[in-house]
Image (cartoon, rainbow, N blue to C red; front, side, top):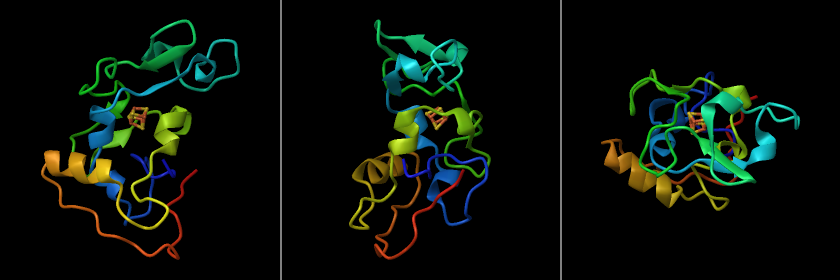
Length: 133
Ligand code: SF4
C-alpha cells in the first residue's frame, strides 16, 4: 500500500484507519526473506505460516477470507489497527486505496461495501499520498 493500510497513527483523512477489510480478506503472502529469524527480515516469524519453501503468509489469511493474526479491533470501526504496523510485510505496504490516477482502488470499493462502509471518492493526483512511517 502506499503506507495507508491500517495505520497505528495516521492522518485523520486516511480511510484505512476505520476500515481493515483488506486485512480480513486477502491471503497476505510474501517472500520468506521478509521474516525474522536469520535473513534480516522484520515480519515476526511466529505470526506467519509457511506456504512453500520460499513463500509465507500471515497466519489467518492462508485460505483467503480470513482475518490476519496481527489485526486488532473491529472491522469498519475507529479501533481497527495493525499490531505490527512497522513490521508489516511488503504486500501490506504496496496496497493503495487510490490508484495513480486518483481513482479509488476497486478492491477497496468492493471490500468496504462488504462491511457497510461508504465508497471512497476520487481524489486529485496533486494531493499528497498518505504516508506514515
Ligand atoms: S500485517 Fe497488518 S497491515 Fe498486513 S494484513 Fe496483517 S493486520 Fe493488515
